[in-house]
Length: 249
Image 1 (tube, rainbow, N blue to C red):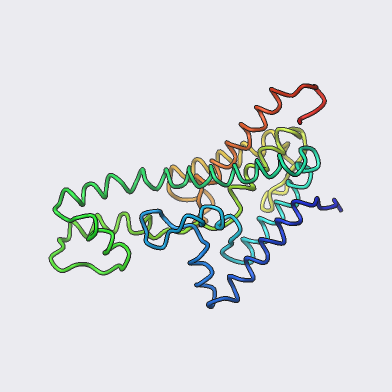
Image 2: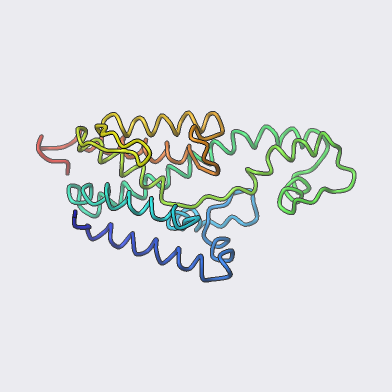
């Protein structure tokens, strides 16, 4: 069994502690409301959530698969790059993942918000109805329909290390293109140089469709894409700038 590297071990511990806190404090909701990432227009949003959501998870299986992936891909990446560069990719991927997902949200949210303003509602009224899910008297059916379109976005929350993990997976694929990997539901060995781009493509298509190809719900597909993109770009840059053809750092 592959020995776990130090930074990966510490990240695993932090994620588990955060999950225990989610379950134990405030019956799961209070901790979640503090540290999950909310849409910036929502009153529940706080700046620290940009970082803390990376250590939050929505359930045991969500935590397990992310931590299993972190161990499997993160350990060999850290062993090659060292802890500082590993963490640089990890957090850069997490931050870009948030940017990609929020960008997709705003792309849908802003035109509808502007349409609501054009109907005579003001911004405070719109946000009040979206936040409380209570319709102000006098609101027309057309306005309610527009509100319903952006209600899921306004009240969306993000949790998980998936964006960070996708960056680490991309880095692993750049370093080990011929390593053979398998999906749980497709036990066929596939080389990393095909497997990882395939996963990214699936997320991209799912994000554009607004629904997972495999039918899973509540997945931040564009966050996965963003994390993978920055992991690839950072590793591509480091490889291009390497001073020795046998080294990555």
